[in-house]
Image 1 (cartoon, rainbow, N blue to C red):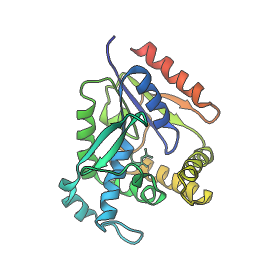
Image 2: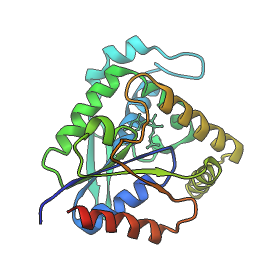
Image 3: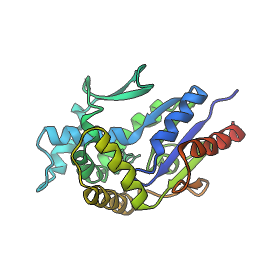
Length: 227
Ligand code: C5P
């Protein structure tokens, strides 16, 4: 059976990574969470004092991008690959609301995007990959055989993210999570370089009223008719 590339794009917290992981596991494909890579660069910028609530030193971040080495390592127990920054597992640290509040600003920087897109294209060069993000079907893999664009209402997405953060033990307020989801949607959709767009040949799935199982079956069916 020939291997294909599956690109899953969409707004924040639409459940892209959940379905992408399920599909990759089912097909024996590699799953790549491109958002984790933007989060890793953001975490680096925070650690180095290059971004906080009052400032963002874009030039300093650009000049230090050569210090950023991102890798993924498959975790058997979890069943997916965790992200590492310069050899350190940062999977937990990058999922906080604080990182979420800066990541979209970092993702507007073209030099950051260029470096990460290059790495993403390398990871998918042999096909057999499911990658989720914002520009996978438009920029990273414009020739992907299957492109999905996921949507759901902002309230539903914020509720899901809020529950995830609570489950992790983070003390968060629903309104802050909703605000973050809306702000990221706005920045991601309006930035100059690679804005979040539905590729012309992408298939849109609104999962507001779909269960995880229904969503999985829908995407799997599309994958099966494409392969
Ligand atoms: O997917 P996730 O919500 O973890 O992505 C975090 C942020 O990274 C997004 O809000 C967006 O700003 C950025 N991103 C991007 N391009 C991608 C993936 C993520 O700009 N391909």
